[in-house]
Image: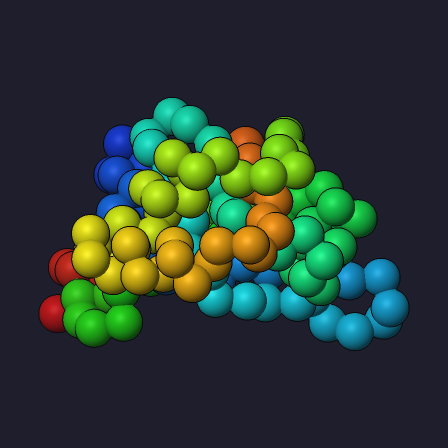
Length: 143
């Protein structure tokens, strides 16, 4: 039986670098939209996601006002954290320092510089989500 992570363990795990899967409800009868995403999170804070303002993901987030975020280890020992979160803030443009921090988190310094150059002139929006409910599992003791 997997053990549930403690509050501090799950927050630290979410704060670590993972590509998350974001799921958001749809209104057209299709299943929830699930999209791999980069994100930013610090323990005790909000989950932040930057995306294009005219993307389907952005439209659905604005309509639903809530998402589920899943992060996991893909190699044993398996662990995961699932967070149901409520949209608490939307910035029409992602502040440059946040966009840079997210890019550096996933690409490193040099990769982030290249990525940010490629994004010049592209609009973006920043969504901030308050974590409401957590589900977690650690299968370390199962091996």
